[in-house]
Image (cartoon, rainbow, N blue to C red; front, side, top):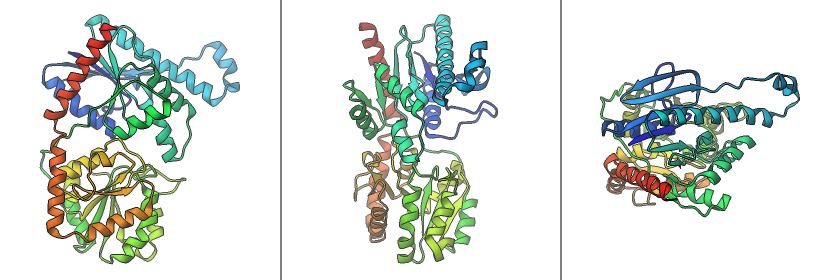
Length: 406
């Protein structure tokens, strides 16, 4: 099959390395595997700074530059236009670019199916003559609410996208159900979970060893990913004073890039709330798998109290490494973790429930932890490429068949 993925994230156009994000991580895995199986895979990124085409590990990546060129009329009225109108004009140019590139690709050799990323509404105007589907990677209305910002145009574009899409699938049942109810959609949203590819390279324990010296061999809870409101940074700040007071040897280690909260560092907010125990809240910069995995392996547990999430790779990776994960119920973690069986659940947006979950963790015996982590590992195996990719290909065939029938 010739499959085209339209996405705002994949690889960096300058260094040609994978983009930092869950969407890009997922696409890198599945596109390279499909290319290796003989499918013709094309990735279109319409928001690049310059137009070019490169081959990346068997995948043809088209970087396209969508530039809004102001006419004389635009130049005259531009100062008087609202921010929303300006955004809309610019985004419409991006959609026109997507259309032109897809039609050009289709004229060279027919495209069997297009997969649009829901993020930034890449599928707002699906091609009428080519089968396509939208894969849910986020929902702007939820993300804005939990990141505490407002962009009405982003929400409007996504709403139109979901209304226009004939076929939608995604990894998170929570997100799918939320969108269906919120937009009163009657169409099916197929659930196909995110594939998990274990890291097979050599691990580098140097970062862990430095950390272990700093904390003098004490146990630690590990958070890794984007550190901000969406991932539960405020709830961590509210729960840590009591947790650190109750468990004098326990540390909190944060790994990842920060997303500022009202212009302030989330780590500093958590440390300030920890008061006299601030030194036991440690932040490390974003780590590659080689240095990250030893940090996961030696953690007491991985703590992921997201306000909302989309079946996150962070949770799946930790489960694959046989670690106890404390994840948030009401944020899609309950789809991965069975409470007290393969992990522990707290309540999304509830700092007190994080404290309760940590209490439950600290009360577990070594035997109970081993049993729980084995169950977590077994669940991660159900997300292997061998299990997930056939589901994706079957769904593509279903879309193509039903598209043509209608």
